[in-house]
Length: 78
Image 1 (tube, rainbow, N blue to C red):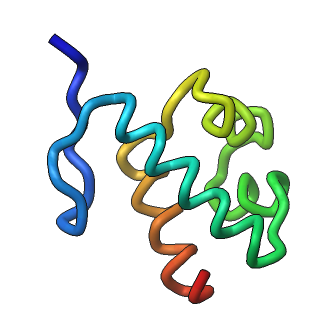
Image 2: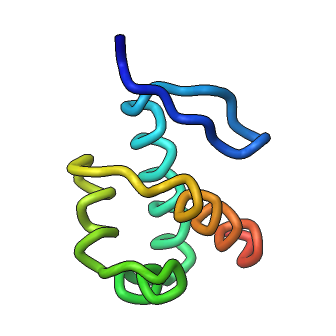
């Protein structure tokens, strides 16, 4: 059985793979808005290496980091 993660109320219970894809979609929106990995990492309080790992499906953010990533997209209108 795949690992499961509970996301924010806007998202339903998903598999790790779906969670990773949602993370990448949020990152792509921020890149399109003009932010880079370093700027996103600073906002989230993680290393740019962590952001790069999320982008290449090598790891996924914690629940709090995912919420902050979602919040950043929402605040910027990205």
